[in-house]
Each structure stands twice: as C-alpha cells, then as structure tokens.
Image (tube, rainbow, N blue to C red; front, side, top):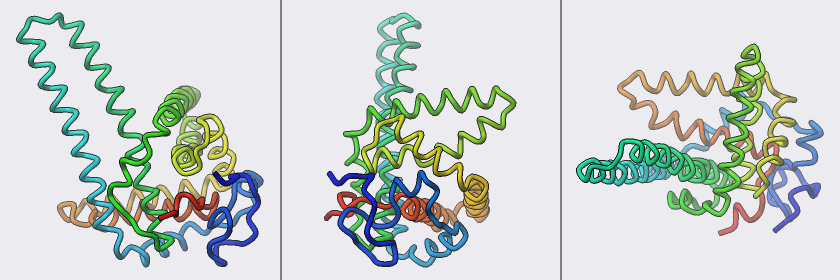
Length: 251
C-alpha cells in the first residue's frame, strides 16, 4: 500500500499522481491546504449527475440490512418469550443487538463516501461498495467508542468542548476506511486538520443540514437530490484536504 504520509508531486488540478489525488496528510496536519467550502458545494451540485441513483440504491441496501437484522432479532425475542426465557436474557440480547447494528452500520455507512470519492474522480461506482470495507470494522468501532466518550465528556464540560469535538472528529471514520488508519491516528488527524478550519467547516455542515431540511419539505422529494449532494460535497472536501489514495480509485 502506498505511504499515506508521502508528499505528493502534483496538486488536484494536475490529476492523478503516483500515490493519490488531491491533498496529503502531512500538509493537512500542518495546515498547508486550501479549501473553499461554498465553492466545493457548487462543484458537488454540478457533478451530481450519475451519482444520485447509485447513492440511493446503496442507502436502500443499507436499510434493508437493518430491517433484516431487526426482523431476525424480533423473531428470536418472540421465540424466547414463548419458551419462557428470563427477561434478563432478552435484555442482554437487546444490548447485543444494538452493538451488532452499530458495528455493521459503520463500514456500510462510510463506504457511501468512498462511492462519492470514486464518482468525483470519474471512476466506476457500484452500490455494492457498502459491503467491501468490513476489514476495518474493528478500527471503526474502537474509534466510534472513543469519539462517543470524548464528545459526551466534552458536552458535560460546559457543552462547547463536546460541540468542538463532534465536528473536529467528522473525518476520522472516512480516514479509517479510505486510508486504513488506526483509530487514534484517524481521530487525531481529523481533529488537528479540521481545527484549522473549524468555523468554516461548522458553517459548511450547518448549511448541508439546512439544505437537507429543506429537502424534507416537499414530502421528502427534495432529498432525492440533497442527500447525494451532501455526501458528494463532503467527499470533495475530504479529497482537497487529505487526498484520495490510488487503491481507493483502482478499478
């Protein structure tokens, strides 16, 4: 695998280089990057064609997995109740179910951003991408636990530290999926880089949230456009900051 810390020999405008497209980790952590959030949102809108359907198919598969696991748990619970199982056993199974759902959801959810990265670079995109990243499921879950604990502690400490971490850690999971980073390395890389553009990134995410809320208004039809647009915009910002590795774009 290419060294994710190697300095690239060309920028995003020059296209594919040996290791990646876009930024690089060293420059990102040092704050040596430029990204215009609003401009990127416009780029994502103009590049939306061909991504909407595949994004929604991936989301459908995502929810079908949830429904399938939920049905299986419901059937198991019903069988246990009919056989007179202790309620404490059912309670333990409920906790296990929540953990399983969280573990399965993490690689599937962030794989959709990988789809967006591939689309942004005119590579073939498949909704089946959501099933291809279970190799990092352990790292994702550990990072999720650390992030959740730190954010909760931050919220308890006058709220603002928790809000800061909530957005500063936003790219930790994609860094694990796309660059195969360890949990702590990904969390710290995301925090150090997004801290440098925290207010702009916060405004960017707030705008994305408002766009999706507006998409809900006409009986949700607007979300056909707003959800893929949001994912693509976030993927493009990621690429401009961290770059996208050659193995991510390989056919």
